[in-house]
Length: 232
Image (tube, rainbow, N blue to C red; front, top):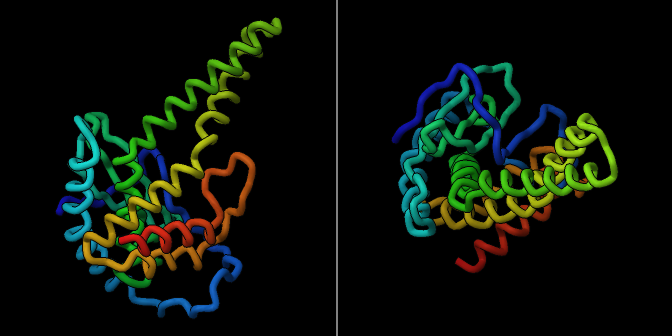
């Protein structure tokens, strides 16, 4: 097990983020009972021990030449919104960060296992690299259009920035669903119930189906988990 406390969060990539505002109900199933912060932290330690080696095995089996040595870290600032995200350290090592507030917001090990497996799946499926390529393509396209239409340097720069944003977000919802599907497999192989873990989505605000939104609607994510789990 390799997880440490961080005094601050790092670069944000694919994430699971919640809000303090109450979400609209998406299920008639009563939510799991609230647990103590101490129990949630013990759950997190147990989950990391079981899920990390499974995620690393899946990473080595599904990729070639990719760094599969995950590091799990905790942002212990209590003024942060509940969040988890995957990024890369400068040496290319995959890093998954949980805020302490997200850990303490979960109700059982299955929820933590699903979130951890989901973030590991982002790395295994190279979503950061694919997102970066999409951003570069968007910047080149809109920057090129601005150039041939006679825009000046400021206009071209603005077009490139807009293009990069649009390009980066174009497939972000698909990336989240891909990570949900592979995360379901990883959590299952680690001995957890991903369907129960995905009930976490029932307690967070639904981002809806917004144009250029970064996350798909919660019901669609739950359906993806259930569909994948049914095939296991």
